[in-house]
Image (cartoon, rainbow over all chains, first blue to last red; front, side, top):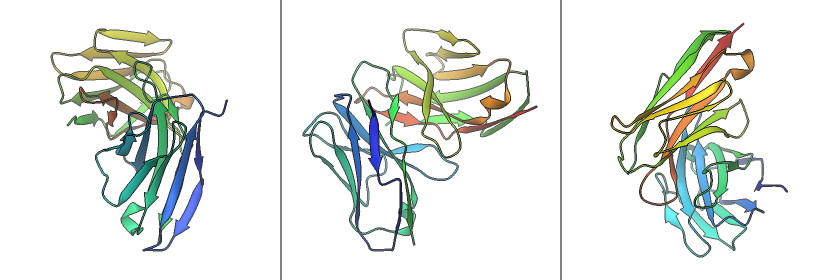
Length: 113
Length: 112
């Protein structure tokens, strides 16, 4: 049982390049989330998907798009990367009513030059 | 939306002493308050949580208290050990949707 799997683990991009971060969960959870964590700071919600077929903006959605491909997979896309998007990105999943935030991926460390 | 503030931002304690981290939240309808421990380079790990119908919860050396009237909740770590050194985050789930808002984090250093 892998839980939440994120790929890639590390990536370096140049300004203006595009990239998709992948996230998959094998717990049959309905809700999935993308957060970013900047150095020395807490996690900020970028986008979330309460259930398959729905997505909603979080606190910091600008510069990102998401796709809930199916119940298992939730991807985050940077269309034109900017240095301000250098961060660690965490994906998470949960089921309403259970302990929220128990299932985080290992993160993707993204640097934009 | 929900706003969560966390204090202090850094906390240094002697091994064996207690550590207390405090958080306040803005949405009076928030109903779930988890705490996370994050070691350097690792994912956040849920260590304890409390729901709005409970005032206090304990799990071995850690405990969380919730004051709904004042809209604040606290994490208490007793008999601290060097392995407790990490960054701790509080969070709150607001009334709208199944999502969390996080505090800014507290870096805890336990000195041997």
